[in-house]
Image 1 (cartoon, rainbow, N blue to C red):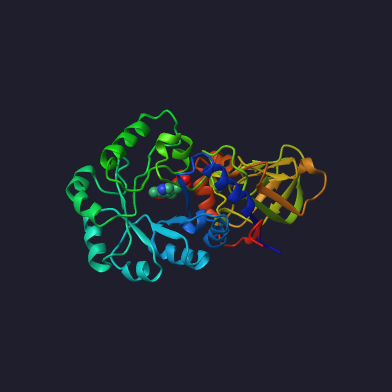
Image 2: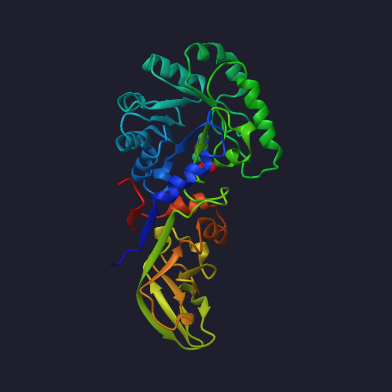
Length: 349
Ligand SMILES: *Cc1c(COP(=O)(O)O)cnc(C)c1O
């Protein structure tokens, strides 16, 4: 087989959700964020696993994603939509029973007009300046919005992965001043906020990256393994180069494996000459540049030609690869391409 194998360990995913859930008390619900196709890992299998594990609320970025989650989890769980009620969303929201997190007065008017009595949440901006009501708009609308009984009022932290960042406390104070005394269910924390402690938990947290095995949940179980088949091996003599730009030049005889994945599969070109692959425990450095569909790897240390090399797994997780590429684990996961043969392990029987 010429495509790489992406193995997604659903039991690690649900164990990570449970670990995040255990950070807060019984009165706090831990929802699961499954936007962007479940952070690139397949929103159907991911959501089905989490629903079987007891997750009662899911969040997606846009209504179209919510429709796919509804098909995976059935009628029971609630599904919230961060982008709120956009023009053209009404039919999808109604037919799939999705709950828009309304971001503006315009969205509130649209929702109340198009789907009177249908559930909704409210998203507040507490300082990130990305989505949600500004404090002044909220002050104007609050009476009417509360009268229409939102099922949740939420906001999002900009700096939760930096424990000591002063913006965390500032956003917490802003959220409290916008929501204290309203008697509404509240949610502020994603993975980073869960780890900031109970002040940030309120009634619901929204777990994302930690479930998928990424920082800032440093104790997360690895969820993905990516094994790439070897297409061809050759020995290069001293002075010979490997790959585009001839950036790798052999200092002595080197054994090079050419393997079947590249930047079109989400293995960023910035990894060129920097990242390593693993044959079991043995480190095999990339030799030269990442191509669209291929990597060239120095396997001299192995002594025998392997069938596969791993780039993601227990030895090297998404954050390690992200650090080398100058990005974050979220982007590594959501960049994983569509060409992989995907296998799900540890799922519901
Ligand atoms: C993506 C997102 C989350 C999940 O964040 P993680 O850092 O992945 O846990 C939660 N809430 C909102 C509004 C988001 O956009």
